[in-house]
Image 1 (cartoon, rainbow, N blue to C red):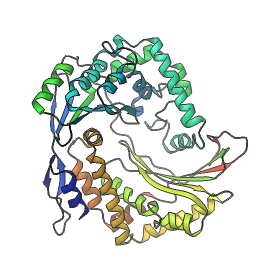
Image 2 (cartoon, rainbow, N blue to C red):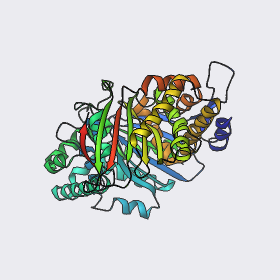
Image 3 (cartoon, one colour):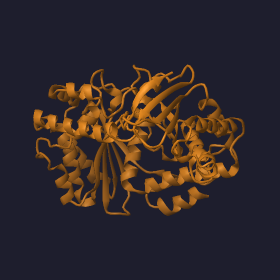
Image 4 (cartoon, helix red, strand yellow):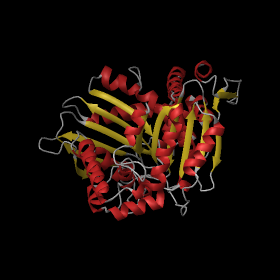
Length: 462
């Protein structure tokens, strides 16, 4: 089987093998990533993963705060703070963080923010592990010894420009905001975009930033993963040296659950945009990341739109030639996910005709399971994607963090594979019939309109 072959090729050194049951004949053993997990007295969680095949080490820090945790009127703070964290700390001068890493030959150095967490990462030659840990610890413990109002203002301008570039001035750029605002209630943690709203960003002060740091950027709200060519005993000494003296703070309370989103019926949005091609986006609220159904809906998305023989691509792009492209995807998140079907139509084609065809294909899937070949292709793509992604030490380190926060188990990798390996055609049919309902969805139609904003303007909700 695909998993056995890839496991043998990719994980011979850093894993052990454990069986995964399917309720039937024995199947290939699942690769299990070895790790060691411990917590410092100040609350910092540490995960070590040893792999000596390549002389590099990935350092990956997750702070358990995302845009879902922002108080009212502070939208965009988590992302803004991600930028501030790169501008220097007590012992790292302004704009030198990346220079240290570049001189050391680092790769994959960056930070990202989403609804659920903020992460910082770098991959360095194994003899530069101490440098990476020093840099991360200095900004965890001593950022406010350096950051000032000028630092804050400059990075706020950077974030506002990022919003203009990626959302406000991009074709279809604000459609995702309109969808989010109308899918999630106002009091839901996912109602607003992570990038932040202009009003909240403009109203932010440096005092707000300092309070955000003191609330969330604490060792007892962070998980440090060190993965790669390490000696665990030495790594522990370095972690204790650089992080052990950072004081613990009051335990923050990141949001870990939210009421399921339930639409009362079908809701439609009409958006006008100064673009050439119409676009249709159909969105459903779906179960949380790493749940059984979350994996099944990943496979449903593959059946619908992955490859030229997939159901929606074949109908819309190849047979009828009314669409430029089509995609279906399960956007997984900690407090609730969403399933989207997005179609960019050819010029002057009718979005409602496309919607009718989507309904036809989904109706078939709700009533009749996908074929064995469809399930096999979808499963192979999902499994190979997971395994090949985990082959990169940078991605593997991030996966440990994602599993730890999302499931409480850094070693969830084998169980993650099992979600796809164990899914049956009947499971996919049931997932579509349960969650992708015609009367429980949000339909967004983007109409080309000269003179409208390129990013789109919402003109009708019904």
